Structures are given as C-alpha cells and as structure tokens.
Length: 253
Image 1 (tube, helix red, strand yellow):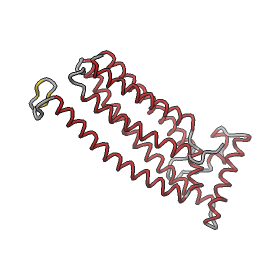
Image 2 (image 1 turned 90 degrees about the vertical axis):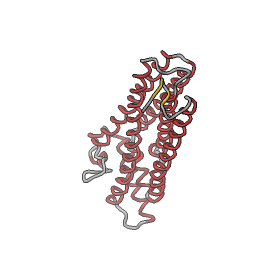
Image 3 (image 1 turned 180 degrees about the vertical axis):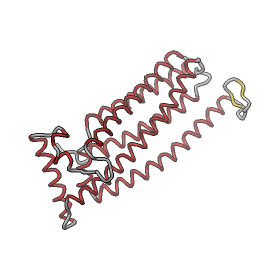
Image 4 (image 1 turned 90 degrees about the horizontal axis):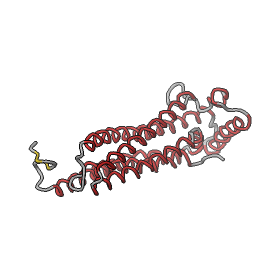
C-alpha cells in the first residue's frame, strides 16, 4: 500500500482519511451493540422467568470488587479522553502518559476480574457437573461464612425455593441449582466477552504507546488515538450496563 507520511494512498487528505476511519469504527460499534443486545435480551428474558434463582446467583457476586472495577473503568475513560485531547493540542508527552494510565487501569480491571473468577471456581459456581449454588451453605468454612452471614445465606436459598414453588409446585433445590447455573452461564459469557474486548483494547493501547513514543501523534495526525478512544469508551459503557444487571438487581441487605 502506497503511503506518504501519515496519509495512505487511497485517500486524498488526512481529513478524508480520518472521517473514513471514524465512520468505520461507528459501523463496527453498531454491530457490537446488536451483538451485546442479544445477550442482554437473553439475560432479561431468563431473569424474568427465574427471578429468584437469578437473585441468589447475583448475591454471590462480590459487590466491592464489582464496584471497584466500575470506578476503575470510569477513570480509564477519563484518561483515554485526556489522551485524545493531548494528541489534538500537540502535547505529545501527555499523550504517552495518559495512554499508559489507561493501559494500567485496564490491567487492574482484568486483574480484579481474574480474582472474581477464582472466587467462583473455589465456591463451585462454574457451570458444569460440580456446580453447586448451596456449596457455601454446606461448606461455610470454605467460604468464610459463620454466624449471621451463614444464617442469611441459608434463609436466602430457602426463600428462593419457596418463592419459585408458588408458581411451580414441586420446585426444589435441584431446580434452583439448575436455574442458578443458567445465571452463571450468562454471567461468565457476558463478562468474559467483555473481558475479551478489554484485552483487545489493551493490545491497541500497547501499539498506540509504541507509536506515541515515536512522537507520531499531534494536531495534524491523531486518528488512531481518537478511533481507539471510541472503542474504549464503548467497552466501558457496556460494563456500566453489566454492573447493575449482574450485581445490583435483587441485592439483599
């Protein structure tokens, strides 16, 4: 592909090149909205059908870790926006600094998510043959439960079975376990897909950092930073929807 400076051969001006790249990213993000939209719809339908089981599943998530990750991503959106601004005004050192901050915050998010996944593995909440929504109730020492916390967990499971039994006579713990497993299948599917997007975004940031250190981005050419910024903000917005849906609905006191 022929190239002159920062202008690729198929474009006449940098402005045309930037507009084309931006349009391409918006089209891509539209397809992503449709993709995630299908998952959100699947989650909504099943949440309505098995609200008690989904409530129990949601209450096993660590609200502090989820809240921490939400703050981390909001901060990463700020640093990403600042890197775009720095490129536009020609503050090349700040471009590198803000890109590095965004990458570090993204890495923190993925690290926290790995800790959450490890917790679910330890508590037998990975969908499959060993899945057991009552594992912590039956093995309180393994989950650090005792006293009132253990009693609350026992009551929550009993109340969930009772609530579902009103609409489905004969509903038991095995049914609750099955429907809670559906919740966690969606949880891992949705958060895992989001994490994959984060990893891709981190790869883009590494490339931008390399180019930024070479002083490539400034007022005349900053398209890669802006386009990557659009992608990063989209990924952050997806999490803003995932957090309340997965962590906050039917949260026990």
